Image (cartoon, rainbow, N blue to C red; front, side, top):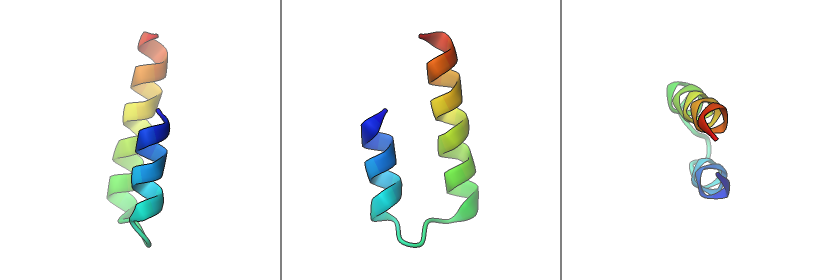
Length: 33
């Protein structure tokens, strides 16, 4: 999920709630694979 990390890096500073949502999404995607 490199593109998600790049998206977070572009948002400077990223909103904390968005960061938490993305981390949760990454965790779910990793659990499914």
